[in-house]
Amino acid sequence: MAVEEAAPDWALVLTAISAIVISILGFFGNLLTILALPYSNRLRNAATWFVVNLAVVEGLFCVTILPISGAHLFSLYMRDQSLFSNEGCSVFVFLRYVAINAEVFSIAAIAVNRCLLIAFPRKYPSIFTTAKTIATIIMIWVISAALMIIPLSKLYGEFTYNERTKECDFSDNPESGGAGPRKLFLALGFLLPCVVIILSYSYIFYKAKRSSARIRARSQGSLMKEDTINSMEKKPSRPAEGLRKRDLRIARTIGVIFLTFLLCCTPVSIAHYLDNKYHNLTLLLLLHPLYWAQYCINILIYVFMNNQYRDAYVNYISRFWPNFKEVTITKFKWREEGTSYESQRQTRAATPNSIVRFATRKLSKSSSFKGGLGQSANAVDNNKVHLNQQIPEEKDSPV
Image (cartoon, helix red, strand yellow):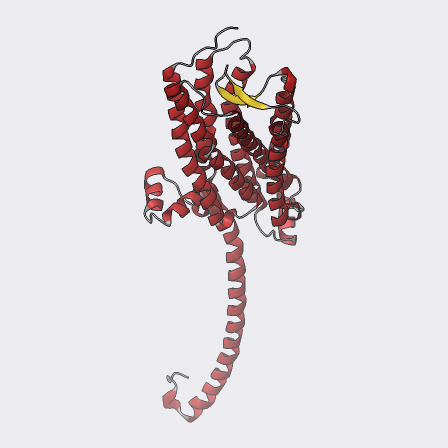
């Protein structure tokens, strides 16, 4: 039997340090998301709770899986021995795959949430109530754990330590099912949610294109008369176009997070898949930091792609650092969503109607007041005639 390739010391140390650094950055970044988003009154909706759940998943991964992975790599470097026992290895893989499944399911839940909001805006409040949102989040965790309990209990598949890749994963032993369990749980826990995400975003993209075409038609005046009649018949509770843009912005943010997830996961997944034919332990080790990077860069995506999330972060940090908001304005030119161009445009669009209504009321009151003054003036003039006849010296008196 061929001797397994020894992992280079520099690759072990570099990967271990990356695990620790990403663990620290990811923990604080996801903790800020967990605290800041619910703190904002404007973000207390179903999509936000799914995003918070995603941050919880990633935060738990950062405080459990990454430190243990780093310790395991340091153990290989210092003692040339795995950190795990057989039981410990099984539990570690179970926790890792539960977190991965919950992450993908959370992204899928957000995609479906945005899709249903855009498809059924009137029914959406009854679809995603608080109770249903909480139930969905609980189901995400239950399904994620239930899938991995099967190989953990060795009903189908098995977790073990792989000397070839120096990590804990599914066993390829024919007695435990060979590669079958890995493929099955990969399909259920990864490929199926990805199909749901892709279908949801395909529909969102389709609706966005239709919405853009309709907006262009409005700008050309083809729907001006219809919009004028509709606006006179019924006053909307809030601007439909602005609402649509906010929803699409959140959907776009989560879409970028999904693409980042694929970008980080795909290289190491391909390396594992081709390991039997093209074994390169050094490359496999160095691809792990790229895979782990997703757990600390999501907050950057939230900050730079979504104004509402960025405002939530800034406002929450400003509770403890009062000058932080001024720093973000002067250094990064960040301004709150309420003072953004879109909000100002909506405010200006609503202002003329308010002014007209106020001016109309004021004018009607003024006319009534002037009418009353006219009648009073006539009566005063009549009285002046009598007074002038009786007291001619008071003709300049202020009656």
